Length: 176
Image 1: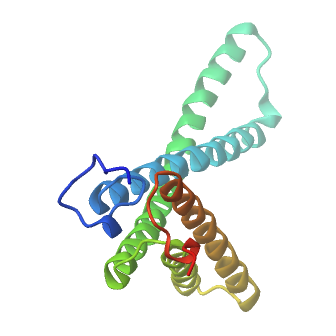
Image 2: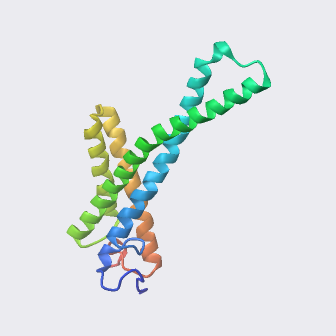
Image 3: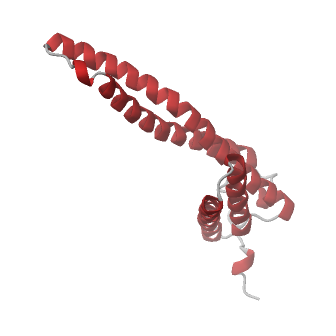
């Protein structure tokens, strides 16, 4: 059995990917927020660019200097639009990742076991919370639950594979 370098005093069920619960929750929230900002910024920049063109389509520049200032002003508007849309996306995605990781960690502590079941249940619960917050219709709620369950199965399965490769025991893989 390989020892965990993250912390020797932590019970084995609290470590996932050799990270303590605090490290894992903060890391996933931060990475989720960064990913949300990237996606939101891309969407905001595209929307701002098209809006700028639509608002000025009837008075397009004619000279080289006018084109320079047109693009200079457009770039400022695109950056502002990217940040305006990117920040809310970052907050939403970071919060969702915080919710998922927090639920997963809570289930690890309750069951005293970190396995695919906790990840699966945390994914379903996260999908249910999102559906409730946004008051999604039935079909969209079903879709959110399926996405949450899929993400839970993928992350939990990958974590269990890593733990198995490290020589740790996985209860459902043990032969009786």
